[in-house]
Image 1 (cartoon, each protein chain N blue to C red):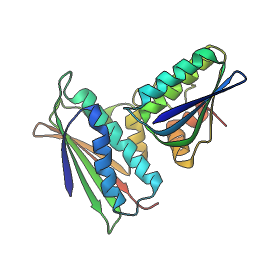
Image 2 (image 1 turned 30 degrees about the vertical axis):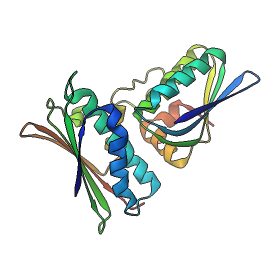
Image 3 (image 1 turned 90 degrees about the horizontal axis):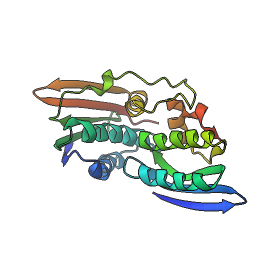
Image 4 (image 1 turned 30 degrees about the horizontal axis):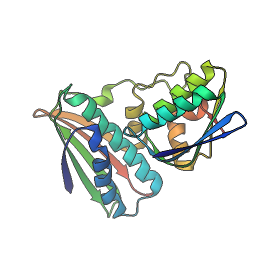
Amino acid sequence: MTVNKITNKGKTTLQVEGRVDTVTAPELEKAVNAAAEDTDTLVLDCEKLVYISSAGLRVLLSTHKLMTKKKGTFELINIGDDIMEIFSITGFAQILNIK
Amino acid sequence: MDKLDILAKTENLDTVIDFVNEHLEGVECPMKIQMQIDVAVEEIFVNIANYAYGTGEGPATVRINVDNQNKIVDITFIDNGVPYDPLAKEDPDITLSAQERQIGGLGIFMVKKSMDDVTYEYRDGHNILTLKKGLKG
């Protein structure tokens, strides 16, 4: 898994690529936590995300809670069908801010 | 039928996933189903790695059988750890708001939802958990 960070006019976009699993989720958590400190508008671009397990969902939920707490926004964009299915069966499709 | 004997450690997750995918790639398995199977395998293996042997470590066996004619895969996990039925865990309430949501139990819930059948038994000192999934899209 790799995470690429793009900052533009106060908005930070993290492009996540590869597999977010039990082994790699802590790296994603580190990247989003670092980005969340510097911005109120955090976007996770999932175009190249090919896999996510509950370890990754845990990071998404905690990020969502963190950004809500600081009155910012956390958006997910470019969600593929296979990943969307996982969001749907777990109820994450309803609670995350998916564009 | 093929099997993999491996130390139940999170670091070995990639080896387990690769072992399963090698078998799925031999049949025409849609990517969506392969991902569901990978997620289920990860959740079960990581559960064993985290809980079966307490703070110590021990072995796990992963057996896979692909029925190419009927397009069904069976994957069985066996460990010698403490008796534990992950299926007995209560399902999370997925209708709660983000602030109320707890993350516990989500992994097993995903396994139950995405597999066609999941069974658990404790026999002769072994936890035996079997996943079954049809491979047709």
